[in-house]
Amino acid sequence: MSRRFTVAVVGCGIGRSHIEEGYARHPDKFEVLAVCDLDEARMGTVADEFGVPRRTTSFADVLAMPDIDIVDVCTPPATHRPMILEALAAAKHVVCEKPLVGSLAQVDEIIEAEAQARGRLMPIFQYRYGDGAMQAKAIIEAGIAGKPYAGSVETFWKRTAAYYDNPWRGRWRTELGGVLMTHAIHIHDLAMFLMGPVDNVFARIATRVNDIEVEDCVSSSWAMKNGALMSSTATLGSQDEISRLRLHFENVTFESNHAAYSPGDGPWVVIPRDDEVKARIDARLADWTPVGRRFDGQMAAFYAALVSGDAPPVTSRDSRASLELVTAVYHSAWTGTDVRLPVDATHPKYESWLP
View (cartoon, rainbow, N blue to C red):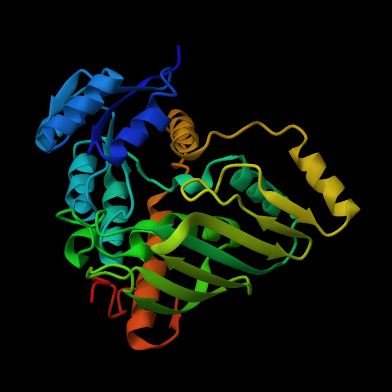
């Protein structure tokens, strides 16, 4: 009989989606035994909906449950660091929403703690999952796409004052950033997943849409380590919500679907250079096994890693790469300079990217 992992979900906002799309779709792999939230009404609604037996407002109570294997942290960003460290110290596996923590110094602290822990840590980057993104990855990794040339990344969403009528959103100390951090971070991870690591960044940010502390418009230019050039634009003032990647390689152009919150879903537009390239793509995808979308796919991959003892499908170092890009964009925007990666402990924003 296969192993079944028990889960406690902490934070019932986005945590509800983790249950619905991830754990509840794999009842042979996971069982959600507990939910934890300071909002007891919301917690009760989610627990009743999914038949979760335990409910608590205390994170300490969750950690004290000896039969919980996985602690899934879905709380506001500024609370993540202590929860991750405490859960790892309690010998739990940890799943954590973005942003993992609030600085590169904290990411490195987490990486070191994980190396000493029994449990494994998986940051959430669900846009990687879906047939569109994973088929593009397979074509690239097979060498069919050839040399990467250039690409564009778009996050055109809408957020109004009602969205920010909340005690932690729109504030540097609690949300840790704006559209770059909270909204574009997932598609930026997907872009790096397919195009490789970033070498150099130049960026501008602005607050134009809402009366908030953090930015709600950002434009950045990336030089990738493989020589490709990328541009990214994000705003929360679009009248139509889309997320879109368009990537150009020597032999193939890829364009994602435009779904705002699931651009990894298939089908993607895949344009081969010629019939020979098309035949190679068709052969690579001929026996394709469908990949679950968003949390469904990521949780299934996490389960396989836990059973096999392999590294999680998304690692703390992947999160570091994401937050390194965030740090570089903010520093570039505030200084008007190009920022070369990696960002190490000598960098002025290593301890915090906050202004």
